[in-house]
Image 1 (cartoon, rainbow, N blue to C red):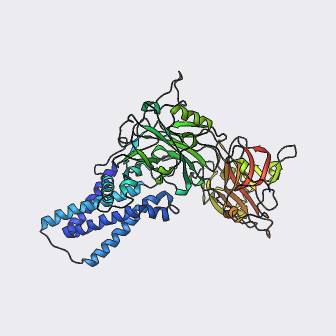
Image 2: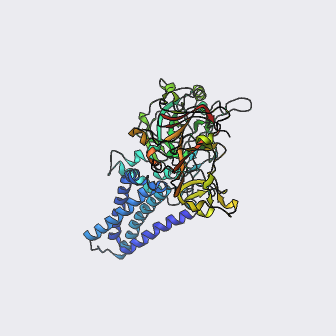
Length: 592
């Protein structure tokens, strides 16, 4: 395995360099390295949350650790070299061997920090053949399914600073309690969807891109019954138990219960293609034991909607390697409930969702589970009744007092005449493939993601081969592209209406008959001279003020908003926050 050679080579190189400098210099460097590591782990989360998640999300957690380590080490070295300019001389043997030994310690810490930091970046599960954890054949995240190092520099470094965080460098927020086994967490996050041919899914999200909105407990006399459900039956109708193994290789003991957490993912949690994708390794529940220790568990199942055009939910198991749950349809928000085994006597404390920590001790129980733990059978009934995930927007709460009504019946109704089109076509704004800089395209030259401003000349495609033109926005079988013309002379126009300040920070959206909301994922803005095209399913429009500004003095400006809508739903309204701008009566069905 290449990683073994890299780790050993790195440690030996540092040891060799400091053996040549001597015992005293190596001692000073080791002290600097230990302190630099302590500083790096101490500021890791503040630096990442405050600066990096908003700029370099894919590399944020790695840079948040490696950057402070390198800067601190350089600053400490410069300061010590100024403070202690001379060296102490020892006999050649102790000088050489002592320098090498202390240099090796520095090397282990340096390589360990680099390994942990790089491990938190958006990379494949195995880095040069190394992964501290993996999926076993039944889909459980375990250490034994990983690939170990000859010299586990990352594990040794993590344990060193865990000990220091509760000992000589103790704090009120110790690493050992908030991020134990950081090297394992790095490996768990990289158990992502995707491989060499498919873009890897996200390894982290921002704190404001999800919310843990509820909790429920499931208990049974026999732990084996916990891992059965009425959604997974044999041909004879019997419930089939799931094989569950904890990360340390043990099996759930008597007294174990399931703890479910309902998570609402916002638009920013989506991938560029428009779905939220989560694997079992990317959620980590830390529970406190009676003696103050910690137990780490991963979800064994997830409750999610089975299709985008219905609020009906089902329960899906993480029961095979590389099983991932993806949101369905095009709704802006996705709710899922993840179920974790909790051994007897533990108290869940922290839930890490793609490495963002939430204190779950204060998460309220959902209504059906407020009194006590529920049985697996009651849980299944609650899933089918919609009591676990709940519903969408309450249509009765929408303000339609100033809405424009579009009657959608009769032979004279033409959606396109009303500025409403169900089409993925760019229409008059098709362009040549070589002009697609700024966009990601699929193999059919459809736009997956991106933004670009064009001159009008770019849309002159006369003489260009049709197979080399970019003609459409990408969509899959479960989603349809809806384009709404909100220009000044259209019924959907947002020009000429008086909006409160709060409405300027709310996004325009479409709402369907079951309360699902669809935020705009882009636009085509023609200002008469240039055309700006944006299509970003993973970064929807979050506020009215984010849209290109239409001017009354430029009536030739045209703005079309782009939405990804679940196939088969019925759209009832075009809204801004809770205010209905246009209502469709009866609702418009978005066909397959």
